[in-house]
Length: 65
Image (cartoon, rainbow, N blue to C red):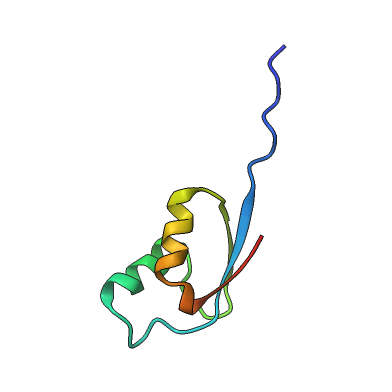
């Protein structure tokens, strides 16, 4: 029988500041994280790619483990 993988860690990301007034690149990063409205919360896998995106727009987000 195959061993089950442990559940992948996820992080909750909340958009707390509007991307209006920021660069187009930052707006696209917020959209790529799946955020489109203020106070919207998404769960993403905790991996280096997502962490890098969060670091790029950390001033607009609230992150919880």
